[in-house]
Image 1: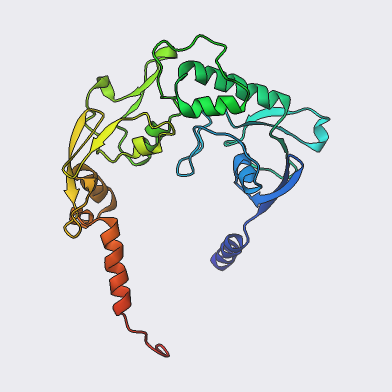
Image 2 (image 1 turned 180 degrees about the vertical axis):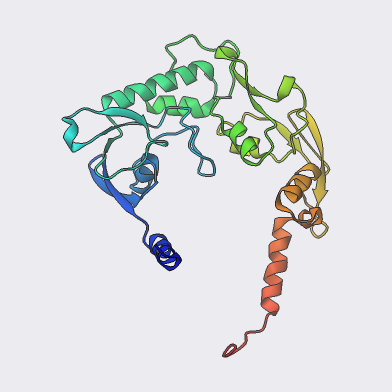
Length: 275
């Protein structure tokens, strides 16, 4: 096949992405090839609960709350329990999100989470929706709001820092920096704290300093509005990763947008255009 044909095929594929048609709770859904069952359900307006899923990160399937049953016409009623965030949407797939087995599995997951985090509002609310007001297991004598969803460690890895991770095993498993000391690689970006669904990562921030994971950071203040908007370590990290001068991060995003808007208002419209 010639280069011209390959280019034409590539353009056609980009212009008309392949789609698959499936059924979710009796509703026909068409989604782009490569989408997950969870993506398809959300597109169809079908609610599937999740705790460890985030659009900015790759699917992980750790919480097991998004399980669904899948089957096909030729399976004679046999169903397979799958994690919807990691199971690919396929032509002819039949998805059932509220079977007895699905409901029971989610209840077990939430029952265990309620035992670990009996005082966490998010878990209490989800458990209550599934008919659980009190855990049937022994409640954690030292309640925590950390549900071990992995979002904080994954986003830290995603931005290329990897300052925190899960440590220990079993009931002692937790998220922590190396040796439970101030992590040398942390840049104080707050990505871990902001993505946490239970807001269990404490931090303090002001116009001069920010403290998280027992590490203190000096803030960069915007020369135009005076707002502290980024740590110096964060600016250096992004500058080194993106190949832009560190001075680019001195000005906050809001002031950058105002500058850009002001520049556009001063541009003159050229009639006709170049011939």
